[in-house]
Length: 395
Image (cartoon, one colour):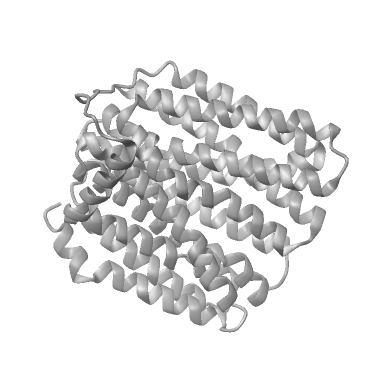
């Protein structure tokens, strides 16, 4: 059992590394090539919007078809598109055409992620006993944090030493390695009795299930609110640091290191306490600490204390994500998990761009400190709200 889980998590970490590497490299390449906020925004939209749109259907397919085929198929399709782009780059002379083709590649890769992500979340409960889910999700979170820590540095090194084409080819290699490892993992799949229902009807049934199952519905809403409210202190941290502490790559790098170090520590902590049954308490406490760190970072006047707070912020962030994921896996029936995690993925890929669209422009008119304090207070309230406590009190 342990060997299967480790192989599965490593395979997904390898493919995540390649995907993150390409995503970072393409955005940086467009930024340096154009110095245009419009192009950077376009790449951000193409990286998230297709995933948001297809995640609903990806969840349906995760309940209909074997997860291994979906995960491997999505990885292979992404690798094929990336390889085609890498092959075409030397023959493209027009800069605008190249950028539009990179946009198209990003959109197709995002579609693949929308199919793959719900299948991965739905696969873990089939590999891991319920009492070990928190530990498995903690290990997965730690591995993902390490990947997200390493990928930007690797992307920068490859772009400086080689080229964008080399970065794309690395992603093809990681996809092949990830698929190879995944093929070694026997992933159980229990096919339900065939019913004459369309994919659209199954999608509606998934939404109806989330609405009628109070626990599941509230958990999804909590996650959407969490993603939206973490934008000011999390995703706008680079803007905050440049305004308050100075425009320095050293400062920005230090913030990324502190955040990902905290996230890795949070994943390891969740893995260590993986058999704990107090996941609802972990969720509430993590939301409260997360919000408090956002407020304290907003009022911090010195950079070193800010870095320490950012590290704790990362620990709490992983606590929220692992406890939410585990609770959803436990509270969702097996035949519905693909659709529910399709909705879960959509909450991220939908509320993150929404938060950027709201708080990004506001940060040009309202001090970012104020936005961080307000969002942090809202996160504390989210952790303390009575509906959350009632919903999860039985856990």
